[in-house]
Length: 490
Image 1 (tube, helix red, strand yellow):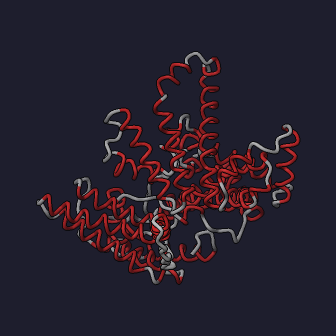
Image 2: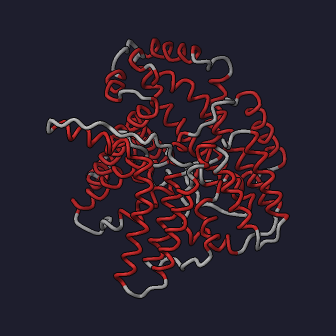
Image 3: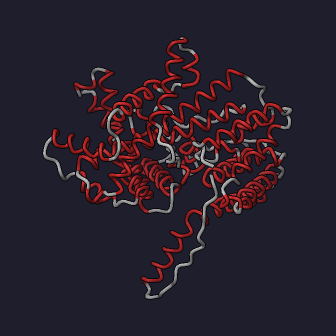
């Protein structure tokens, strides 16, 4: 069930009404039933219910055994059982084809012919999200950062909570547990704020991201025939498309959860205002980067070790992040590229700070911040060539090479890009709408501002002007029928 359809809105409205009509003690169990109903809507997922159920029961049982045992060996044994179960499910459904291809290629190096074996696997909805959520609970119980949950159904609701199943955020049980144990009373202000957050997400996804995708997909889908200006423009616009698409879905998830009485982890805090590459990753996909930081980076030693080991830890985290996105070498290379930029940034921090003191452009804080933001955006967009190539099945090295070709001045380049925009259907008022809409989103979200709280603080005229503008944008400019979110594939 796509969350950008009227069907989902009808389903969600019914769930929200029934949720508040029921006694507070019953609501978590009702939301568990609703979450499994959401999961089972697609016929392919119905056959995969045992996967979600199995991951839930095994990690809950292992957490129970870990929390109730004082024997270190027993605790470690059950921790390993939980990790192997969750990672086994993730690796099998997500990486079997890559593993199988590796075996075939390895056998070929030794002159042996091995036929590939395909299971025709379909990954369950939210696979990466519910496996990481369940793993975090077990590890937190092992490290005594979380109390054991004796109620299996409460824990099952945490793992399968339907607003988080499509693209996260990746929740932590200590954050959601008190909200499950004591459901909130109905609050008009909470529901109104949640509804606005959902509408804000729909505008970002359906109006901005999906219209940008018309151009980006056209360019990357036929990259070999594209000029350098169009490839460069599509690369920078893909960074905006990805942000609007992913953060838009997270806005919908956070808004829906808020209406139901739950506060989820914020996943983005104005990443394009970052003044360094490290700062960018503290603002982008916060739940995932936080997960890797807490459960892998710190376990490797983090930054509390030698300089070389610290830089190696950074690279490992980004490579794992690339692999998390999918079984494609282009995602791996994207992770490696991000890791290389992060390592270079960390290794040269002091020399760059010393040189910056003599840069006349950096004497004004305003100029310095904007220059640094532009540099971060260029670096991020540059790494995304691998990501976009994986998404649209392009050759990233051909794209990098193509960007340098077909330049004969700024005016011809501008005409080349605007001409292709028209060919893609982005003509008339659409480019103006996309430009103004993007600037409004960045202005409203500036400083990591909570848009739902911000809008309630504005005067009546501004608030209702924004409401009507959002409604008109969805009515006249939204792309209907192109509802898949980029990150629901991961």
